[in-house]
Amino acid sequence: MIPARFAPMLFGFILSGLMSLLISVIATFRAVGWSDNVFGVWMSGWLSSWPVAFPVVLIVAPFTRRVVAALVREPTD
Image (cartoon, rainbow, N blue to C red; front, side, top):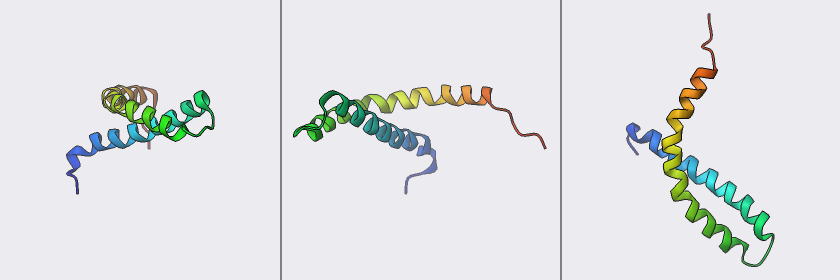
């Protein structure tokens, strides 16, 4: 098991992987359509975008948390 202190980084790793996977498949199909080499083009796009997405998620996540905290109200009992 991974120590809990690595949870934010693991979260960012998994989130960036899934998001870049989904976005790259949509972009690939829009650009290439269904063809014989669509899987290879998609994998190439995904594998080159994930290393960019991961640090971006780690940098943007704290800002996003602050924005969300500013936009929501704590429940009052």
